[in-house]
Length: 358
Image (cartoon, rainbow, N blue to C red; front, side, top):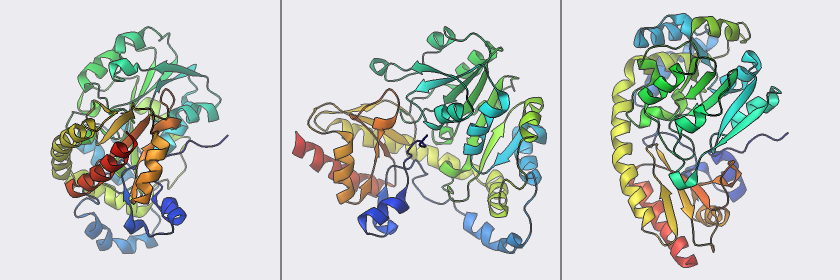
C-alpha cells in the first residue's frame, strides 16, 4: 500500500527541476509565513553540546512545561517525533470498532486506520455548504466505539468549527473517542480545546512544526486523560524525541505565545486580501476558511489543478494539487500563505496562467 502523497516536498521538487530549494517558493506546505520562530536558533546553539547526551526518555521536562502552561498533570501529555506517530499509533493502540474519517481531510487518518486493520467509515462534507462540518449530521452516524478524526481547522478546506461548540458536541457523545488535530488552530486566534475542561473521550493533537516553522525537528504532542495515555505510553518507544527538539520545545512553550499572536493577526489580514484577489480571477472560487492556507476551485473546465501546478513550477512556485484528497477532484488546489511580497508575486503568476486559459 503506497503512502498518501503530501505537500511540502521541496527537496524532491528542487531535484526534479534541477534548481536549488532556495530558488523555490513553497506554497504547498502549510508552515508559518514568517519562517523560523525568533529565538529558536539561538536557543539551539546555546545548548548544541547536549546532542552528546541521550535525550530525556519521555521528554519529562517538556511535558512538565506543557502541564504548567495548561494547568494539567504531566501524565496528560505525550511528546512525539511530530504528530504523525500518534496519528498512526492511536488506531493500533485503542482498537476502536471503526475509524470515522471526514472527507476531505488529511489523508494519513485513513491510512493509519488501514494499516491498523481498522474499518473506515466515511463522512463526506458537502461542497455546496463550503465543506463546513455539520455536527448534527455527524451525530447521526455515531453508534459508540468509534475513533473520530477531526482536523480543526480542517486541511485542506480551512473550515473552522468553534472550539466550544466542538467541546459541547464531544461531551455529549461519551461512547465515542475523538482525536482533534489542532495543527493549524494557532493561526486562527481561536481558543484551544486544551483551554477548556478535559473530557475522558477527547484526545488533542498539537504540532510545533507548523506554527513555529520547525518541521525538520519533528515535534508534536498528544494530550488526553492520563488513564488513556498510559495505554499509549506503554506502547511508545523510549527516546522518541531528539534532544534538540526537546530544547526547542521547552523554549517555545515558554517564549512562543507572542509570536503565535502576531502570526494569527497577520494570517487574518493577509488571508482576506489574498482570497479576495484570487476570487476576482475568471473561473476561480475560494472556499471560505480561517487557516493559513486557502482551498481554491477551478470552475472553467479548461484548466485543472495538475496543469496549474505544473505551470507555476515553471515560475518556481509550488502549490498543492488536491485531486488525491477523498471527496475532491482535479478542480481543487491549495495555496499556503507566505509573506505579503511572496503572496503578491504568486498572485501575479496565478493570474497570468488562469487568464491565459480562459
